[in-house]
Picture 1 (cartoon, rainbow, N blue to C red):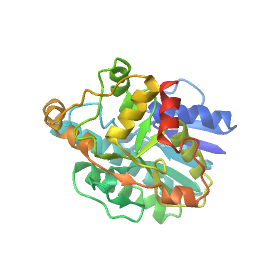
Picture 2 (picture 1 turned 135 degrees about the horizontal axis):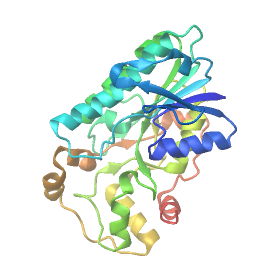
Picture 3 (picture 1 turned 180 degrees about the horizontal axis):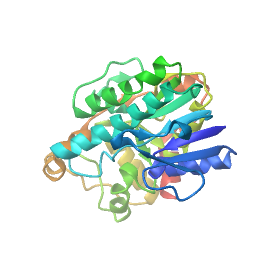
Length: 296
């Protein structure tokens, strides 16, 4: 396949790029700077600039672009950046795809289980309603921005990703070093559900969705959700370290501000559509996944 990828510099995008090339696909990368290699095409989402030729003839598009949710404190300005970095890129891709003489058949669009909001222990599937809060509103706007492409007949998949477990960064980038030192533990009560997925399965699922006959929202998370305390304990066991130094909720709120609401929020999501489409997880169980993550 000829695949166009936006957002290829992040944790997931970089791994996906490598695996797609190993699979034998031809990949074009959308980059904001001037192209440095033959597989790069420049675009400027903030200015609304994307040459349709960058997409013409492609068999699929994958868009993972967007500012990191946990990269900064959620000031008013950064919350605006989180929204615009997603809606501008997604909207520009959608309008450009809709205007092609030959629409690209499939678009796998990054999304997040933040769509569901803080739902406690409620079991969530792709048919569950959206929740409340900043992240839920962000994801609704993000997914809605794909509408022009959907209206043009493109099969659009909204890949609602959970907590990605990786030793290379992501949600565990700050937690793992503490656990290695034996000074990490649950965050807040630890009872909040973190619908997790290993980086290996996240990338495998994205590749699967390029050809699986599904569209709309797809939860990318392991089939057995776990609480924050359970995940922390599993990682500590894999490291042969204790996990006894809990971080109280009030301390997270002081240190992180509104961002703490994302860390303390609970989404117990199930990958109903993904499994029904025939996907098989490499890492379905938490303890084995934790060992895989800490061993690198």
